[in-house]
Image (cartoon, helix red, strand yellow):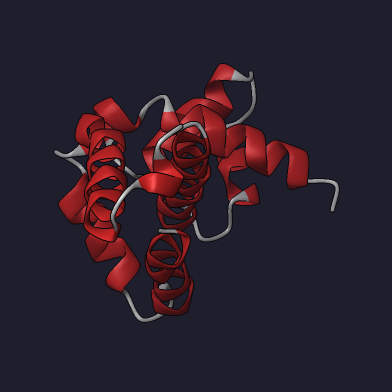
Length: 128
């Protein structure tokens, strides 16, 4: 829809504020303000902080796929080494947000977010 571009822009922008504000509606509102929009513009992200966490997980999945594709030895690595490589890479991506991660997991655990979260939590295992 017409708000899809703005939604993606606010999610990207919101990620720049997660370090300070956590995975919160406030991070999305700050991104809206930076674009000279009302804080209410964050409403184009209807599930708010849950969608921000999901955006982060989707971005991590894409970055992990790139890291795996760029690993010259991937095809020769033992399964346990592949798992170790992928887990280490994924943890490195989460490290900057470790302070906000427990709350992010709490958001994903809410019943209305669980179906989306389960889909994203299983995806990295499939990728590896």
